[in-house]
Length: 131
Length: 348
Image 1: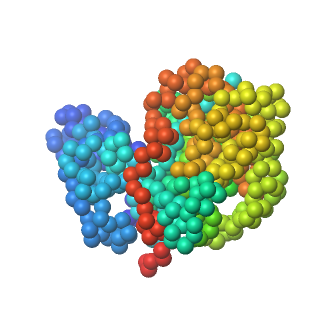
Image 2 (image 1 turned 180 degrees about the vertical axis):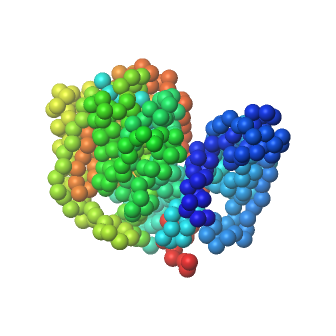
Image 3 (image 1 turned 30 degrees about the vertical axis):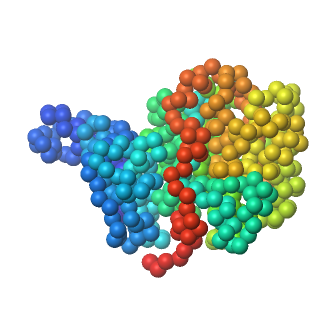
């Protein structure tokens, strides 16, 4: 990902900033300018709670090169208490433990590196709650 | 009076046992464990570094303080493993914590003392009235060269302290620093691993500075070792802090709560700050606490703190050090450890 795009996404990647549609109440993460549910265009900014529940997940055994040393690992759709959904890698657990309904905490982690000399990209990953 | 209004710590969940490292190199595990008093150490994941540890500890400190992050006027991170050679760790941490952009930020380095260095400066800015709140963080993902004595101790973790003037969890009664030029441990630019002076890191370095700073602050405050409920000394291994404390007149009971190194390892800039966090997790109102750090090069910072009545009420807002230290999720083989510490070189 080019550095400027990563930089523009800092509020959502670093602080889990999202928006809630003022017309229908649907939360969107990351923030949108048009609500995908009602096409409303007025939003309030909200901060997502750093916890959630696994909705669905999969296990990667053949990963992109930069994640090759981490296989096998789970990736899940996590829903926060605000109703927003995000995709996150599950870490500090066995992939087989990751099931729908698993409560998780969202922790700030290094997501990827732009090669050996590029910038470091941070964001949130999920860890089983209480781990 | 200024003091701590919030604190937090973070210790990665992976561990490697000293026995496993000794087995890899054909060394006698029992003598290592007996000689250094080290049983296991924390290991950071590929996605954990000084920045992520600082964010986790900083969030816990803000949770305990319960203040608007926008009121934090300064944030300093002490580490010898900042992920970038040129680009601050602090800018990423303040963005993640929701602090700033009206904030003064700097990365500090002073071997293992950089954490208390950050705390010292943060405290000073609050005491002077220059800022309302300031955070000092000590965090490291330290490296030891393969088959070096440091490989048994160099670990990962850290702690964050938010200083303010109201709703204190602990008063800072006094500080004291003692610094000389002592080449006991260093890493030149571009070198993978630090080098050290073997036994030279003991008497002329660690003990000289830890004892001088601790004696200095005792003299400055007029306090005696028996006046303290807890004492924390920098923990490069298990033996050094116990020996330093004993020399000063402290008992094992005063040191055991903050003596985390047998199962945490040496978290360098995060070492004594994490020990202090473990003490604050259990301290009662009016308990007196001594903390003395040590950083090679060399210097020690000492702080005398007194727990307040608010501390027990606030500590439950974030995880305790013991809850993190006593529940590792995975024990690594040496091969896995080498992979996680990026000791295995791969093609791009």
